[in-house]
Image 1 (cartoon, one colour):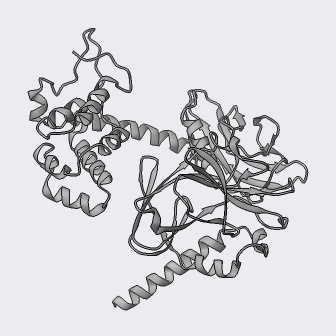
Image 2 (tube, helix red, strand yellow; image 1 turned 60 degrees about the vertical axis):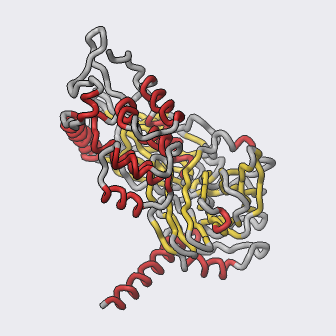
Length: 463
């Protein structure tokens, strides 16, 4: 009956929380002890077990959690934990340390992601627990955790109130870019590490991979993803188990080995904190013939195997098939056209238009980033023009309001709904024309006109 369902749900949440806090640690971290100078770790551990695990909504690069009651909550994507005293909406994004790491004072070093955190009512956000990458087994007694905080465009180091083998706790003073840092007298600090593999996509019959050895820090991982995305040589990520079997030690040198006849350059890389480096170091692995092969990461001093994986031909052939299938799907969708009488009234044909020189004109479809910019400037009476000008239905409005209470997010979802209906006609000029009777602000009109004039591809204006 209903009672059994409720009991099972509560039990499941308890087990999930316990596994996230304890079960995911390496067995080498089990003997970790918290210094007596810190708050009672037993009480802290008990509070963490009673948290609720939630998956956030993601809009572009920003995560959103809508918490309906007081309590402790953990994000399944970032590992962030929040302690709140009432119903709140929290949004947060992962930032790069590249612009901030150089401002760290003294011997403070980065040990976790940098976040930009916002809340609709900051007074209700009691504390935040930041994930850190350090392995605390055998750490020295002088290990200290603090919080790097960008406040009023100034960088400050604030006190933390507690730490555990996985998180650093901070009582919220104000919201802005924040992230955990540490200080230690010894140099041989160990981090939980990851290995990321990217395959270069080209017409060459051989295989070329880029293999990154990095700290398990979302800011660093995001930098690597961004670097691959903007690389001159297109690449795709190979999905393999990424966590290292053993910890990575700062200052130690590591070598990537393969049993196959693979060329690996460079021969070895020193493990350093790459958070502040814009260009991340990596191993380049080349095989002349496409064959299955093993990769292993070895610490040179101890010859200890830190990470290993087997790459099979199906790992990259499936990627090529998926890319081709996506291409066919995109082409299929491009054939679909929305019928818009208003668009015809503007003298714009449904067929592909051409420039004066006869070349095809690429349509300037509004991006989600542009829609968010518009949503931040639009009026709270958006349901009126959504129905009267953008042809949305009342049930659409009810559903959008039900999904989120933040007006800006509601407007964004409304514009996104309109974009999905319009398909190829979801352009700035079409939206501006449809809103001609909506009494929109001059600022919104100017933004749309600017979007229309500055296409992402810098195309020649259509005539």
